[in-house]
Image (cartoon, rainbow, N blue to C red; front, top):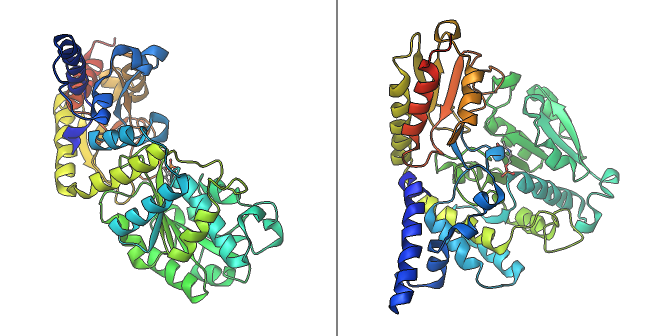
Length: 429
Ligand SMILES: *Cc1c(COP(=O)(O)O)cnc(C)c1O
């Protein structure tokens, strides 16, 4: 639930608790909180507030689950699981395997693994498919991949920045546009295909839908990876694409799932996940050696899945809308202001508030508003589609401010609304 996130209220409650446990200690009575992990989480004094110590500004995230803004905050029950995991060493392989088996069961797929993010999941998926197609061990990737079957087939419209994650295994990407291209491209050197889940047919000229993409690859015996990194909510997407038959599917752990930011999930067929595991750490001679997830974050990822499965999409979306309405109401009387709400159909499928106005009347441009909110205290980050039409999937332009409320903590929608209103109505002349 949104109301469970880390809030200023909670922080002051923690200050109160640490104060009162100090008082309790003086009085020689039992601490308020029972077990070690709980007291660890609650006992935050200013000396272990490292953002303050380092002088790193805390922000209000009115943008969304962006990597450069550290994406989501973990819910308290996930934070507690992380703190408990920090108390004991375990055998990393035991934890990796047990976590994968647990997640697979919860998310209704044959097998799963916790990775250091969706990008790492894509690398490990690629390594698994190379291993499978060529029957080679982890040590050969990427050094000898140039001499093996090494092609990944991708729609031209699905080329993206995460291609890097596949290329670092030594693969070559073969672009296709039409269905005929695609069938021709699925030759003997192909090890896998990659589908960018949120790039629907029509977007950037994409022609092949996800069902056709899958069935044609399987007719040619080629495994398919689907990148659904940012495509939860709805929660059921976590089993939808593996359920359709995608051999491998990745999700980011630190976006909508609200696990640790350096965690993610690779879900899919058992024989491929087993190969992905052999390409992963703690094995040193493997492409995944540098993609380690610490015990705390593996546990945090699993706990986040448990937390998520207790959530309701309807309740969460209603809360995001309530916050959106607070901000829209705060600025609706600004001259020329038009407010509307946009729901991206797949990735970041949550309300985005679009605030459009005439800067020649209001006296300030959207980019100036963005910068003004960034430099005030508390610092507010608006969605990066603010003031531009260049962000794929959000219908913004230079006179539109964009806000996503789903990463706001309780009470912050009011702050964002007030700050926006103040910046838009002060006399700019
Ligand atoms: C965010 C994202 C990734 C990377 O996710 P990480 O968990 O940060 O590695 C990969 N693909 C897509 C489409 C994304 O949106």
